[in-house]
Amino acid sequence: MNYYYFSLNISYNTFLSHYGGVASNVVVNTESGLRLQLPASRFRPFLSQLGVKGRFRLITDQSNKFVKLEVL
Image (cartoon, rainbow, N blue to C red):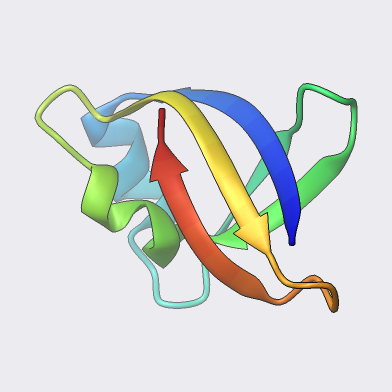
């Protein structure tokens, strides 16, 4: 398993207006300096009235396929 840590702070309105489309992606920089692109739909479970905020951990398998995204 591979673990990637990053923080995100996107307001509710920004998330809906910019990432509301089916094919939209979110680009994040990990704490180790790696740039990752993830489908915005992966963040919808974490969307609240405040937006998407917090420190996250992305878990991928050895082939870098998505396994899990969790807020820490």
